Amino acid sequence: MAELRGPITAGEPMSGHVSWRAGGAAARAFFPADLDDLANFLGAVRHDEPLLLVGLGSNLLVRDGGFDGTAVFTHGALGTLRREADGSFFAEAGVASPKLARFAGKQGCAEAGFLAGIPGTVGGALAMNAGCHGGETWRFVERVLMLNRRGERIIRNPEEFAVGYRHAGLKTSSDEIFAGAWFRFPPGDVDAARERIKELLQRRVATQPLALPNAGSVFRNPPGDHAARLIEAAGLKGARIAGAQVSEKHANFIVNPDGAASATAIEMLIGRVQAEVAEKFGISLVREVRIVGDADRRIRQEWEGA
Image (cartoon, rainbow, N blue to C red; front, side, top):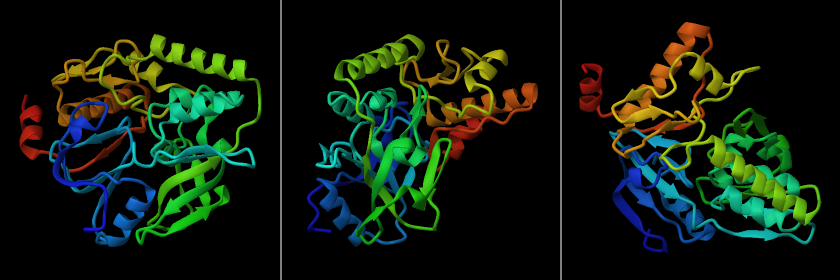
């Protein structure tokens, strides 16, 4: 891989790359210089090499035993953002969703404002069909740029994807990853768009524990209800396990207030919340955050014996 321009490191600590500020290391990490560099990497790396695509790390936990593969960091590399001649907006996967919201808002597209409330990248928003405050990513997707494991670029239409609540993926089995997308937002007033973004950001600050390490909403909202309401009704607001805590500000957030919680503690608290909500209300909360890697068995045994 001598032709690659971005660095490859070994034993990359993932706690410095995820918003929970916890977790193990990736065996290898690649920081592509740009989309061409990523395509070259995919064409050169072994096809059975496990890959972990990382944007801002705002919805990710790597277990304490680490990830035995290569973490690929897109933020800062896949950063192209432009308005096309046909009025659509093209954003590569590493563009922060709030940046796309501001860029579109400055051109009067108020309905892009919900993206300001999503603390991740466009790639993550596409993979999760991220949404908030009534907006969802795929509602505005016109075309998608994909990369396969041979480094080939493929442009696909939304009809080729199965899109649901907090999930999107190709209908056919594929080794492709999200590299970018073209979005089309209804035109509107620039001042209205600016006020919409300001309002959403103020609401986030008022209702979410943004000052503490967190990974956003931990659980999907079950049909007809809210995960936060169920967690609070189960008496779990403020519950702790070894440094990890259910936020006292928003019960669907788990925070790492002192930065001392391990990934194991966070995952155990997630499991406790799921178990107690299921026991009290008969509802199975589905994780929204992604958990990858190997558990550190020694640490897990220590907590289970505590």
